[in-house]
Amino acid sequence: MKLLTYLAPRRVSLFFLVGSLVWLGGCSGGAKEKVTGKATVDGSVCQGTVVFVSPDGSKQVEGPINPQGEYTVLRPPKGKCKVYIKAPLGAGGAPGGGAPMTPKMSGMTLQDPGVPPPAKYQKPETSGLEFEVTGGTQSYPIEMTNKP
Image (tube, rainbow, N blue to C red; front, side, top):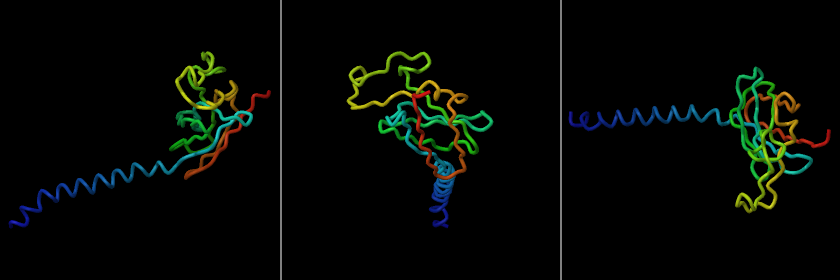
């Protein structure tokens, strides 16, 4: 009887621990679905955010472009997605943007902060970029140009 009294509260704790681990395991499974790549403009690193738009247009999932031009979009919508690049705030060429921030202005010490995406690539309807998301880990290098 003393053994049951001792185990009863621990059984409840064990139940919650196991349940929590199962729940967390189920939630992290979707993180295995991702698209990675490098975004460039005429061979130079691009700055901004890569956005994948679901085939029906109801969902947008984005991933920032790092200083090396690499991006990762976690859990992108499946199917043939339109892709576009959001320019960083204040970047030249961005809708409503001014002159791009320089490393000196922003307090950054980057050698080359990258270039903003050309205006054509900043909207899903004009970018011309599409990618078929099938699941798992996929690679999609995005090469843009300023040339007409």
